[in-house]
Image (cartoon, rainbow, N blue to C red; front, top):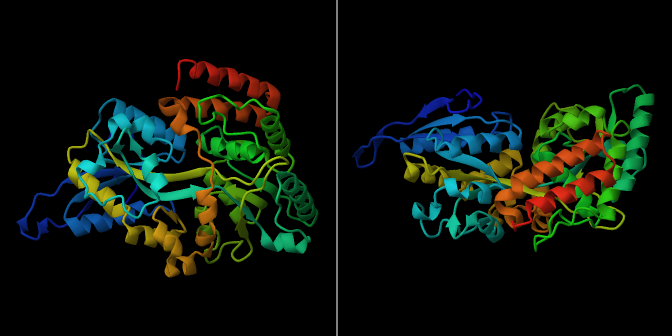
Length: 426
């Protein structure tokens, strides 16, 4: 099966045809198109789509979408806004249900009453908009600190508990390794490009310093405060010191590439990077660990919650078959395989106690508390405005990282911008 990027307004992908002979006689197969992952090493969606096609006799076309979640959302909004029927099933970010809900079917109309049993209740609540179940959770995420355990041991350091400690340790080991001959060594890599990934990183910096979550639960803009300034100023100091200047264009895979090649002491990334880094033959196999993210001087360790769900477009010609595919992808058995083979965090609570999952991916069980206590992005309170809120946030943060604005100035501008957005209520 081949994978091609999804061209706007066009159907791209290769059909996975199942047999048409089903129990009870010959049945005309539906042709379903699903937009899911990026076609990379951790993209399990096409494998499951093939299995579903073979099991049901339907046909499915798998199309890949942009790596950047910001670009992916823009593409979805364009397709759905034009009421295009090109895509039946969409993989959606945890912060998108409120934005896309008008264009998504109520899965409860097509699935059994017990379809939501076994999922984390909060995730089902997140995907329920105005009483309509618009998506089923596939996997969940929380930001992690990856560290080179061999280097920390060599230089006599424990895993840092604060961002200040990380900064000092990263600088020391980076400089020592460069002096020893590895001029490509960096202290810390993360997602610094101006896109949704920077929102998740910067929210962790600010929230872990006790600076809040941009907009509080009552809808008040809280981003401009001394602790947020402290967090942003520290992050800006990393650029060109412990982080490469190019980190300002890094997404998840760019950061992973540097860390997995052995050229970074620390990395902030999602849980998926664990299994890939431990794969046979990698430069860091058996030489790294993962831990909770550091905290600021006046805060606690927090991780931004992420994750992806599957939804069905209102403009699908075959919503019943599409909903069946969503149920198949998110079933407990498929999530278990996803966890074991790719290290993805399930959205079904029982799998965090499953012996086979924990044997294959021990850190998944350890992540349970991190996931339960993670910090959500302010998507629920800002509703349909969230995309603009996030865009304003990551652009101001990027300007701080680029040295174009001081943290104080950027947060003052952001406060004014968000206040204007929410003036008439979110």
